[in-house]
Length: 343
Image 1: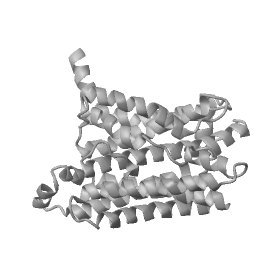
Image 2: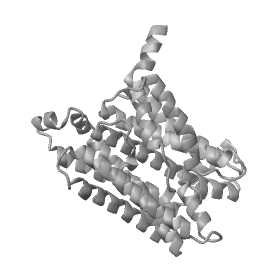
Image 3: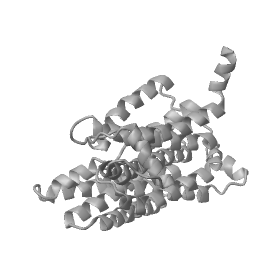
C-alpha cells in the first residue's frame, strides 16, 4: 500500500494536479486575507451569490472588498507571476543559459523609464501604461538592431546588446530621479520602481492582462520547439527548424508579456529567474512540461508574495522588495543544491 501511494505521488499526473491546485488554493485564501477581516464563510457566500444570483445577506462592505479590491488584485498577481515565470523559462531555454532573466533584453528598464517619464510630466494612468509598453518594445527593437551590427555569435551579441540597452535606460531613470521635485514627484516614482499592486481595480486589468495572456499562450503553444533550440542551431536546422524565426517569435511573446506586466506593477524582479529553476527541480528540463509548471508555480508564488506584502505590516511593503529579499537567498540555495551546474 505504501509503495503504491509513493508511486502515485511521484507520478507526473499527481504533480500536474498539485501544480494546478496550488494557484487555485492560494487564490481563495488570498480573498480572506487583508487589513479588513472577511471570514471564509462570507467569501464563499459572496462568490456563490454572484455566480448563482442568490439572495445576498453579506454586508455590502464585504462585497466591495472582495469583488472590487481583492479579486482583481489576485487575478493580476496570478497573471504577472505566470507571465514573468514563463518568459524567464523560455528565454533561458532559447539562450541556453540558466542565469538569464526575462528583462535581459532591456524591456523592464525601458518600460520603467517610459512610466517614470509620464509620472514626472504629470500624465494619467492610461498614458503611463502606453508609454511603458511602447518603450519596452522600443528597447527590444534597439537590442535586436544593435546585435545585428556584428554577425558573429548572435546569441552572445543579443545578450550583450540587451545589457547595454538596459544600462542606458537605467541611466535615464537615474536622471529623472535626480531632477524630479522631491516633494511631489520623487516619492511616487520611487514607489513605482519598487514594484507593487496597490490600487489595482478591474480597470487596471483591461489593458495588461489580455496582452499577458497572449504572450503566455503563445509561449505554451511553441514550448516543444524550444527543446530543439537546446540541441544547438546547426542540429536544430538539420531537423528543419527555422531557428532565427523561432527565436524571434519567442522574443516577441516574452517581450509582450514582460512589458505588459511592468506597465501595471512596476519592477518585480527575481520571479523569472528562480521559478524556472524550481520548475526544473519538479518536472525536469523538458519545456513541454516545464513551461506549464512555471505558469502554475509563478502565479502561486507571486500571489503569496503579494499576500505577505499587504499583511505583514500595517502599511504595504513594496512587492519588488519582498521578491528580492526572498529571491536572492533562495537562488543561493538552488546554487548549493545543484553545485553550481544549474542545468
